[in-house]
Image 1 (spheres, one colour):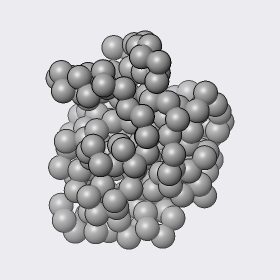
Image 2 (cartoon, helix red, strand yellow):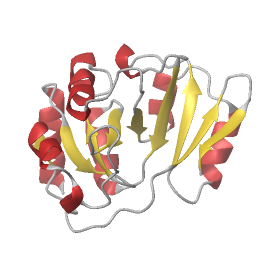
Image 3 (cartoon, one colour):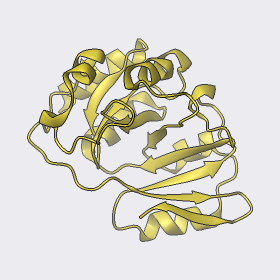
Image 4 (cartoon, rainbow, N blue to C red):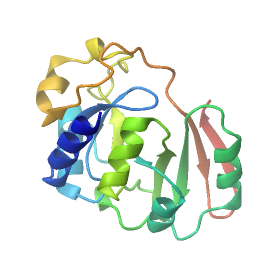
Length: 186
């Protein structure tokens, strides 16, 4: 695993995009602070930049680097969540502008999965995470289901968990700074 983390990190550091296993489905990722790398993912997915993507983080320190104000309920949701949960929070900073949604929000997920967690430790920055499919196509549940167009379109494919079948995509909850809570996907 350490060798794969080093290889993925080197590609990301140079502005490349990777195909990698997450705590939910296979994802396409890059340094969330690099607008050129983010643009490569939009292009590969054939996705409009108005459709935002989420970022993975590995803890409180990274969250506070991206969000000045984190509603208290966010910590309660994260503590009580039994499955991967994406939170959409307001007013992100220190990330590429083309990853921020039109309403000035950003979806984030704290990861526990060892590969992602250790890669984030090495990067010290958030990691873009979007499903490994062309926009509008079904989300692949296993590596074998990922289209050749995606596999060949990234700069590096992480060589771990190729036999694993994914669980469900994460729950998505939008939290506004004025404490409104909206469940987008259970």
